[in-house]
Length: 384
Ligand SMILES: *Cc1c(COP(=O)(O)O)cnc(C)c1O
Image (tube, rainbow, N blue to C red):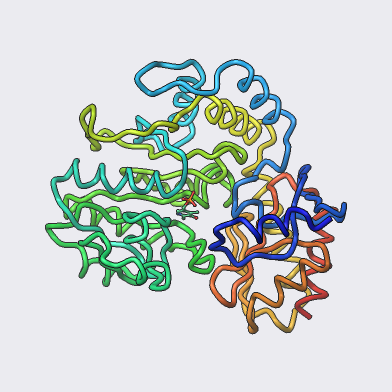
Protein backbone atom coordinates (compact mmCIF):
# COMPACT_ATOMS: atom_id res chain seq x y z
CA UNK A 1 0.00 0.00 0.00
CA UNK A 2 2.93 2.36 0.71
CA UNK A 3 4.19 1.74 -2.80
CA UNK A 4 4.30 5.33 -4.04
CA UNK A 5 5.90 6.64 -0.86
CA UNK A 6 8.64 3.98 -0.88
CA UNK A 7 9.43 4.51 -4.55
CA UNK A 8 9.59 8.27 -4.23
CA UNK A 9 11.77 8.01 -1.16
CA UNK A 10 14.10 5.78 -3.15
CA UNK A 11 14.25 7.69 -6.41
CA UNK A 12 13.19 11.32 -6.01
CA UNK A 13 15.65 14.20 -5.77
CA UNK A 14 13.61 15.62 -2.93
CA UNK A 15 13.68 19.28 -1.94
CA UNK A 16 10.36 19.32 -0.08
CA UNK A 17 9.18 18.92 3.51
CA UNK A 18 7.07 15.85 2.75
CA UNK A 19 3.96 14.69 4.57
CA UNK A 20 3.56 10.95 4.79
CA UNK A 21 0.60 10.49 2.47
CA UNK A 22 0.33 9.60 -1.23
CA UNK A 23 -2.65 11.23 -2.88
CA UNK A 24 -3.97 9.27 -5.83
CA UNK A 25 -7.37 10.73 -6.72
CA UNK A 26 -9.47 13.86 -6.29
CA UNK A 27 -13.06 15.00 -6.81
CA UNK A 28 -14.27 18.45 -5.85
CA UNK A 29 -12.83 19.25 -2.41
CA UNK A 30 -12.04 15.61 -1.56
CA UNK A 31 -8.82 13.69 -2.23
CA UNK A 32 -8.05 10.01 -1.63
CA UNK A 33 -4.84 8.34 -0.49
CA UNK A 34 -3.56 4.92 -1.59
CA UNK A 35 -5.39 3.17 1.24
CA UNK A 36 -8.70 4.79 0.32
CA UNK A 37 -8.77 7.30 3.19
CA UNK A 38 -10.35 10.63 2.26
CA UNK A 39 -9.22 14.16 3.10
CA UNK A 40 -10.79 17.58 2.64
CA UNK A 41 -8.26 19.43 0.50
CA UNK A 42 -7.61 22.95 1.79
CA UNK A 43 -4.21 23.08 0.10
CA UNK A 44 -5.48 22.88 -3.46
CA UNK A 45 -1.99 22.97 -4.89
CA UNK A 46 -1.38 26.26 -3.01
CA UNK A 47 -4.28 27.88 -4.85
CA UNK A 48 -4.31 25.87 -8.07
CA UNK A 49 -7.52 23.83 -7.96
CA UNK A 50 -9.87 26.74 -7.35
CA UNK A 51 -12.60 24.99 -9.38
CA UNK A 52 -12.12 21.73 -7.42
CA UNK A 53 -10.48 18.48 -8.49
CA UNK A 54 -11.59 16.70 -11.66
CA UNK A 55 -14.19 19.29 -12.57
CA UNK A 56 -16.16 17.58 -15.36
CA UNK A 57 -16.02 20.57 -17.69
CA UNK A 58 -12.25 20.97 -17.29
CA UNK A 59 -11.57 17.22 -17.51
CA UNK A 60 -13.62 16.99 -20.71
CA UNK A 61 -11.84 19.96 -22.27
CA UNK A 62 -8.44 18.41 -21.49
CA UNK A 63 -9.46 15.00 -22.85
CA UNK A 64 -10.89 16.48 -26.05
CA UNK A 65 -7.87 18.67 -26.66
CA UNK A 66 -5.52 15.75 -25.94
CA UNK A 67 -7.17 13.93 -28.82
CA UNK A 68 -7.03 16.98 -31.09
CA UNK A 69 -3.69 18.80 -30.72
CA UNK A 70 -1.34 18.92 -27.73
CA UNK A 71 1.59 20.94 -29.00
CA UNK A 72 1.88 23.84 -31.41
CA UNK A 73 4.95 26.10 -31.33
CA UNK A 74 4.47 29.82 -30.99
CA UNK A 75 5.65 30.49 -34.54
CA UNK A 76 2.21 29.25 -35.64
CA UNK A 77 -1.22 30.53 -34.65
CA UNK A 78 -3.65 28.23 -32.84
CA UNK A 79 -7.42 28.32 -32.28
CA UNK A 80 -7.41 27.51 -28.53
CA UNK A 81 -4.56 29.93 -27.84
CA UNK A 82 -6.45 32.67 -29.67
CA UNK A 83 -9.62 31.99 -27.69
CA UNK A 84 -7.79 31.96 -24.38
CA UNK A 85 -5.95 35.21 -25.10
CA UNK A 86 -9.23 36.94 -25.93
CA UNK A 87 -10.76 35.57 -22.71
CA UNK A 88 -7.77 36.64 -20.59
CA UNK A 89 -7.76 40.18 -21.93
CA UNK A 90 -11.52 40.30 -21.25
CA UNK A 91 -11.16 39.49 -17.53
CA UNK A 92 -7.97 41.38 -16.57
CA UNK A 93 -7.80 45.14 -15.77
CA UNK A 94 -8.96 47.34 -18.67
CA UNK A 95 -5.57 48.93 -19.39
CA UNK A 96 -3.99 45.52 -20.10
CA UNK A 97 -4.13 44.65 -23.75
CA UNK A 98 -1.77 41.75 -24.56
CA UNK A 99 -0.61 38.58 -22.83
CA UNK A 100 2.57 36.51 -23.03
CA UNK A 101 1.83 32.86 -22.22
CA UNK A 102 4.27 30.66 -20.30
CA UNK A 103 4.21 27.62 -18.02
CA UNK A 104 4.49 28.69 -14.40
CA UNK A 105 4.43 31.55 -11.95
CA UNK A 106 8.14 32.03 -11.79
CA UNK A 107 8.31 32.19 -15.60
CA UNK A 108 5.63 34.89 -15.62
CA UNK A 109 7.72 36.89 -13.15
CA UNK A 110 10.93 36.33 -15.16
CA UNK A 111 9.17 37.62 -18.27
CA UNK A 112 7.84 40.67 -16.40
CA UNK A 113 11.33 41.49 -15.08
CA UNK A 114 12.90 41.14 -18.53
CA UNK A 115 10.13 43.15 -20.18
CA UNK A 116 10.61 45.88 -17.54
CA UNK A 117 14.30 46.25 -18.26
CA UNK A 118 13.68 46.30 -22.00
CA UNK A 119 10.72 48.70 -21.93
CA UNK A 120 12.31 51.25 -19.60
CA UNK A 121 16.00 50.89 -20.36
CA UNK A 122 16.51 50.87 -16.57
CA UNK A 123 17.91 48.10 -14.41
CA UNK A 124 16.60 48.12 -10.84
CA UNK A 125 13.62 46.68 -9.00
CA UNK A 126 11.95 47.55 -5.73
CA UNK A 127 10.20 44.68 -3.95
CA UNK A 128 8.36 44.10 -0.70
CA UNK A 129 9.76 42.57 2.44
CA UNK A 130 8.12 39.16 3.00
CA UNK A 131 7.23 39.05 -0.69
CA UNK A 132 7.48 35.83 -2.71
CA UNK A 133 7.77 35.68 -6.49
CA UNK A 134 9.29 32.30 -7.39
CA UNK A 135 12.45 30.20 -7.48
CA UNK A 136 14.29 31.03 -10.71
CA UNK A 137 17.09 33.57 -10.52
CA UNK A 138 15.13 36.71 -11.36
CA UNK A 139 12.04 35.81 -9.36
CA UNK A 140 14.22 34.58 -6.49
CA UNK A 141 16.12 37.87 -6.50
CA UNK A 142 12.73 39.62 -6.07
CA UNK A 143 11.84 37.29 -3.18
CA UNK A 144 12.57 38.44 0.36
CA UNK A 145 13.36 35.31 2.35
CA UNK A 146 17.11 34.80 2.85
CA UNK A 147 16.90 30.98 3.16
CA UNK A 148 15.59 30.78 -0.40
CA UNK A 149 18.34 32.99 -1.82
CA UNK A 150 21.55 32.89 0.16
CA UNK A 151 22.80 29.43 -0.93
CA UNK A 152 22.59 30.54 -4.57
CA UNK A 153 24.39 33.87 -4.49
CA UNK A 154 25.39 35.88 -6.42
CA UNK A 155 21.85 36.85 -7.36
CA UNK A 156 20.71 39.24 -10.08
CA UNK A 157 21.85 42.73 -9.09
CA UNK A 158 19.62 45.75 -8.61
CA UNK A 159 16.94 44.41 -6.25
CA UNK A 160 16.05 46.26 -3.05
CA UNK A 161 13.33 45.74 -0.45
CA UNK A 162 10.97 47.97 1.52
CA UNK A 163 8.37 47.07 4.17
CA UNK A 164 4.97 46.06 2.71
CA UNK A 165 2.31 48.77 3.13
CA UNK A 166 4.91 51.45 3.98
CA UNK A 167 4.85 54.05 1.18
CA UNK A 168 7.53 56.25 2.75
CA UNK A 169 10.07 53.43 2.62
CA UNK A 170 9.11 52.61 -0.98
CA UNK A 171 9.63 56.28 -1.89
CA UNK A 172 13.13 56.06 -0.44
CA UNK A 173 13.98 52.99 -2.54
CA UNK A 174 12.61 54.11 -5.92
CA UNK A 175 15.29 56.00 -7.92
CA UNK A 176 15.86 57.08 -11.52
CA UNK A 177 17.38 53.61 -12.10
CA UNK A 178 14.21 51.80 -11.04
CA UNK A 179 12.67 49.77 -13.88
CA UNK A 180 9.72 48.48 -11.83
CA UNK A 181 8.12 47.96 -8.46
CA UNK A 182 6.77 44.43 -7.96
CA UNK A 183 4.13 43.53 -5.36
CA UNK A 184 1.61 40.91 -4.34
CA UNK A 185 -1.78 42.31 -3.34
CA UNK A 186 -2.12 39.74 -0.59
CA UNK A 187 1.23 38.25 0.37
CA UNK A 188 0.81 34.47 0.31
CA UNK A 189 4.07 32.84 1.42
CA UNK A 190 4.76 35.90 3.58
CA UNK A 191 1.81 35.13 5.88
CA UNK A 192 -1.46 36.23 4.17
CA UNK A 193 -0.82 39.96 4.58
CA UNK A 194 -3.38 42.15 2.80
CA UNK A 195 -2.28 45.37 1.05
CA UNK A 196 -3.84 48.70 2.05
CA UNK A 197 -5.78 50.39 -0.75
CA UNK A 198 -4.13 53.71 0.08
CA UNK A 199 -0.64 52.19 -0.14
CA UNK A 200 -1.37 50.64 -3.55
CA UNK A 201 -2.68 53.90 -4.99
CA UNK A 202 0.40 55.69 -3.72
CA UNK A 203 2.68 53.06 -5.28
CA UNK A 204 0.81 53.53 -8.56
CA UNK A 205 1.35 57.30 -8.38
CA UNK A 206 4.98 56.85 -7.30
CA UNK A 207 5.70 54.63 -10.33
CA UNK A 208 4.09 57.15 -12.69
CA UNK A 209 6.12 60.02 -11.20
CA UNK A 210 9.38 58.06 -11.32
CA UNK A 211 8.73 56.76 -14.85
CA UNK A 212 8.96 53.14 -13.76
CA UNK A 213 6.54 50.25 -14.16
CA UNK A 214 4.25 48.63 -11.60
CA UNK A 215 4.19 44.81 -11.76
CA UNK A 216 1.44 43.11 -9.77
CA UNK A 217 1.96 39.44 -8.94
CA UNK A 218 -1.49 37.82 -8.72
CA UNK A 219 -0.13 34.32 -9.16
CA UNK A 220 -1.74 33.22 -5.88
CA UNK A 221 -4.51 35.82 -5.49
CA UNK A 222 -5.82 35.56 -9.05
CA UNK A 223 -8.70 33.56 -10.51
CA UNK A 224 -11.32 34.23 -7.82
CA UNK A 225 -9.29 33.10 -4.78
CA UNK A 226 -9.78 36.46 -3.02
CA UNK A 227 -13.44 36.89 -4.02
CA UNK A 228 -12.82 38.78 -7.26
CA UNK A 229 -11.52 37.40 -10.55
CA UNK A 230 -8.38 39.43 -9.67
CA UNK A 231 -7.66 41.24 -6.40
CA UNK A 232 -6.85 44.33 -8.53
CA UNK A 233 -10.63 44.83 -8.73
CA UNK A 234 -10.88 45.51 -4.99
CA UNK A 235 -8.48 48.41 -5.36
CA UNK A 236 -9.40 49.68 -8.86
CA UNK A 237 -5.77 49.06 -9.64
CA UNK A 238 -4.29 49.23 -13.14
CA UNK A 239 -0.82 47.65 -13.07
CA UNK A 240 1.50 47.85 -16.08
CA UNK A 241 1.96 44.09 -15.93
CA UNK A 242 -0.08 41.42 -14.20
CA UNK A 243 1.59 38.06 -13.49
CA UNK A 244 -0.77 35.09 -13.22
CA UNK A 245 -0.40 31.30 -13.01
CA UNK A 246 -1.52 28.78 -10.33
CA UNK A 247 -5.35 28.67 -10.69
CA UNK A 248 -5.43 29.67 -14.37
CA UNK A 249 -5.79 26.22 -15.93
CA UNK A 250 -7.39 24.11 -13.19
CA UNK A 251 -4.11 22.30 -12.48
CA UNK A 252 -2.47 22.18 -15.90
CA UNK A 253 0.85 24.06 -15.73
CA UNK A 254 0.43 27.54 -17.17
CA UNK A 255 1.38 31.13 -16.48
CA UNK A 256 0.98 34.47 -18.19
CA UNK A 257 2.10 38.05 -17.96
CA UNK A 258 -0.59 40.43 -19.13
CA UNK A 259 0.81 43.75 -20.36
CA UNK A 260 -0.30 47.33 -20.99
CA UNK A 261 0.65 49.28 -24.11
CA UNK A 262 3.66 50.69 -22.22
CA UNK A 263 5.38 47.32 -22.51
CA UNK A 264 7.41 46.77 -25.65
CA UNK A 265 9.68 43.87 -26.50
CA UNK A 266 10.59 43.23 -30.12
CA UNK A 267 10.21 39.90 -31.89
CA UNK A 268 12.94 37.40 -31.02
CA UNK A 269 13.90 38.79 -27.62
CA UNK A 270 11.97 36.31 -25.45
CA UNK A 271 10.34 32.93 -25.97
CA UNK A 272 9.23 29.53 -24.69
CA UNK A 273 8.71 26.05 -26.13
CA UNK A 274 5.71 24.94 -24.11
CA UNK A 275 4.14 28.31 -23.28
CA UNK A 276 0.62 28.67 -24.69
CA UNK A 277 0.37 25.04 -25.77
CA UNK A 278 -3.14 24.09 -26.92
CA UNK A 279 -3.65 21.55 -24.10
CA UNK A 280 -3.00 24.12 -21.35
CA UNK A 281 -5.00 26.75 -23.25
CA UNK A 282 -8.03 24.45 -23.55
CA UNK A 283 -7.81 23.68 -19.83
CA UNK A 284 -7.54 27.38 -18.98
CA UNK A 285 -10.49 28.32 -21.17
CA UNK A 286 -12.70 25.70 -19.55
CA UNK A 287 -11.46 26.67 -16.07
CA UNK A 288 -12.20 30.37 -16.55
CA UNK A 289 -15.64 29.52 -17.99
CA UNK A 290 -16.38 27.45 -14.87
CA UNK A 291 -15.34 30.41 -12.71
CA UNK A 292 -17.78 32.65 -14.56
CA UNK A 293 -20.65 30.14 -14.81
CA UNK A 294 -20.47 29.13 -11.14
CA UNK A 295 -19.79 32.68 -9.99
CA UNK A 296 -16.79 31.48 -8.03
CA UNK A 297 -15.71 35.01 -7.07
CA UNK A 298 -18.93 35.52 -5.14
CA UNK A 299 -18.71 32.01 -3.68
CA UNK A 300 -15.20 32.78 -2.43
CA UNK A 301 -16.40 35.97 -0.74
CA UNK A 302 -19.37 34.28 0.95
CA UNK A 303 -17.45 31.22 2.06
CA UNK A 304 -14.41 33.17 3.21
CA UNK A 305 -16.64 35.37 5.36
CA UNK A 306 -18.52 32.32 6.68
CA UNK A 307 -15.29 30.56 7.64
CA UNK A 308 -13.92 33.71 9.33
CA UNK A 309 -17.16 34.34 11.23
CA UNK A 310 -17.57 30.76 12.50
CA UNK A 311 -13.94 30.42 13.55
CA UNK A 312 -13.88 33.82 15.26
CA UNK A 313 -17.05 32.94 17.20
CA UNK A 314 -15.33 29.86 18.63
CA UNK A 315 -12.67 31.96 20.34
CA UNK A 316 -9.99 29.33 19.80
CA UNK A 317 -7.18 29.55 22.31
CA UNK A 318 -4.32 28.87 19.87
CA UNK A 319 -5.47 31.53 17.37
CA UNK A 320 -3.86 34.97 17.41
CA UNK A 321 -5.55 36.45 14.35
CA UNK A 322 -7.57 35.45 11.30
CA UNK A 323 -6.75 37.27 8.06
CA UNK A 324 -8.64 36.69 4.85
CA UNK A 325 -9.72 38.19 1.58
CA UNK A 326 -12.32 35.74 0.30
CA UNK A 327 -10.83 32.25 0.51
CA UNK A 328 -7.27 33.58 0.56
CA UNK A 329 -7.44 32.52 4.18
CA UNK A 330 -4.75 32.62 6.86
CA UNK A 331 -4.87 31.80 10.56
CA UNK A 332 -2.02 33.26 12.58
CA UNK A 333 -1.35 31.00 15.55
CA UNK A 334 0.18 31.56 18.97
CA UNK A 335 1.98 28.24 18.41
CA UNK A 336 4.05 26.70 15.60
CA UNK A 337 2.09 25.83 12.47
CA UNK A 338 3.75 22.51 11.58
CA UNK A 339 2.37 20.34 14.45
CA UNK A 340 -1.10 21.78 13.81
CA UNK A 341 -0.83 20.87 10.14
CA UNK A 342 0.14 17.28 10.99
CA UNK A 343 -2.67 16.95 13.53
CA UNK A 344 -5.17 18.19 10.94
CA UNK A 345 -3.82 15.63 8.46
CA UNK A 346 -4.67 12.90 10.99
CA UNK A 347 -8.15 14.38 11.29
CA UNK A 348 -8.60 14.30 7.51
CA UNK A 349 -8.07 17.98 6.61
CA UNK A 350 -5.15 19.19 4.47
CA UNK A 351 -3.86 22.71 5.13
CA UNK A 352 -0.44 24.34 4.59
CA UNK A 353 1.85 26.86 6.26
CA UNK A 354 2.82 30.44 5.42
CA UNK A 355 5.94 30.98 7.49
CA UNK A 356 6.32 29.34 10.89
CA UNK A 357 3.10 30.43 12.64
CA UNK A 358 0.48 30.94 9.93
CA UNK A 359 -1.76 28.17 8.57
CA UNK A 360 -3.34 28.69 5.18
CA UNK A 361 -6.81 27.23 4.55
CA UNK A 362 -7.42 27.23 0.77
CA UNK A 363 -10.38 25.00 -0.11
CA UNK A 364 -11.74 24.92 -3.68
CA UNK A 365 -14.01 27.95 -4.12
CA UNK A 366 -17.04 25.75 -4.83
CA UNK A 367 -16.56 23.78 -1.58
CA UNK A 368 -19.98 23.11 0.00
CA UNK A 369 -21.06 24.69 3.28
CA UNK A 370 -21.37 21.15 4.70
CA UNK A 371 -17.72 20.51 3.84
CA UNK A 372 -16.75 23.87 5.31
CA UNK A 373 -18.56 22.93 8.54
CA UNK A 374 -16.38 19.82 8.77
CA UNK A 375 -13.25 21.93 8.21
CA UNK A 376 -14.45 24.35 10.94
CA UNK A 377 -15.08 21.44 13.32
CA UNK A 378 -11.65 19.86 12.73
CA UNK A 379 -9.88 23.23 12.99
CA UNK A 380 -11.72 23.90 16.25
CA UNK A 381 -10.77 20.53 17.74
CA UNK A 382 -7.14 21.16 16.81
CA UNK A 383 -6.86 24.83 17.82
CA UNK A 384 -8.92 24.87 21.06
C1 LIG B 1 3.49 30.32 -6.32
C2 LIG B 1 3.89 31.72 -6.53
C3 LIG B 1 4.88 32.06 -7.45
C4 LIG B 1 5.70 31.03 -8.21
O1 LIG B 1 4.90 30.22 -9.02
P1 LIG B 1 5.48 28.81 -9.55
O2 LIG B 1 4.42 28.34 -10.50
O3 LIG B 1 5.65 27.94 -8.36
O4 LIG B 1 6.76 29.10 -10.22
C5 LIG B 1 5.16 33.40 -7.63
N1 LIG B 1 4.48 34.36 -6.96
C6 LIG B 1 3.51 34.05 -6.07
C7 LIG B 1 2.79 35.16 -5.38
C8 LIG B 1 3.19 32.74 -5.82
O5 LIG B 1 2.26 32.43 -4.91
